[in-house]
Length: 129
Image: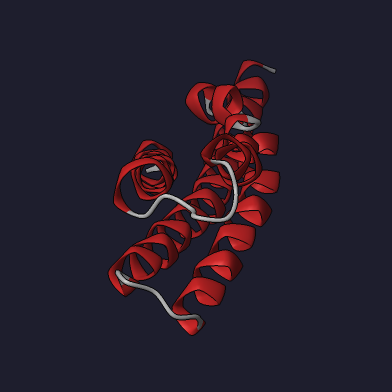
């Protein structure tokens, strides 16, 4: 079950990454700030948990869930402001929620699997005594 939630979290993560890249380079580039600065500030933090998410490290999924909440907040901020394409902000909110729920439920499923494997190992040790 943890593989499913890992897939959900990664779908939200890569969807958010791709959306932000398209949004700020092609669809609505910023007029007042350089594109590179906006990408550095908004897309740069997404690169921090990439390796841990791909390798399925539980600790990375824990703190990456908090990072997803940041992007949820940014999406709400964009929805509240004037935009040419408000559906981009709604997609940002959707992908961040998908990433957050996938990360939290992945950690939960991984903990259950660990408890089950420890219980099975304990029962095998008792049988051999």
